Image (cartoon, rainbow, N blue to C red):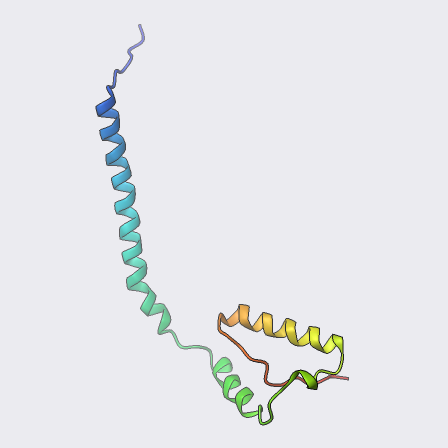
Length: 103
C-alpha cells in the first residue's frame, strides 16, 4: 500500500514562503560580507610598475596630440585599438596624448 502525503494549499504556500525567506536572508548576508571586504580589496597597493608608468606618460605629453598628427589609416586603427584596450584594462576614461610610428 502506497502512503500518499496530503498537503493543503495553505501549508504549501507557508513552506514556499519560508524557503524563499531563507534564500533572501542568505543573499542579504552575502552582500553584507562583500560590503565589508570591498574596502579591504581597494586598499591593496598597486604594483610599482604601474605607478611608475603613469607619471612618465603624463610628463611625456608636452605637446597635445591631435587628429592631424595621425599619418595614415593604419596609425588611426592602432591608436583606437590601444585606447580601447587601455580603457577595458583600467576601467577609466582615457585620452590619447601621444603616438609614434615604429619603423
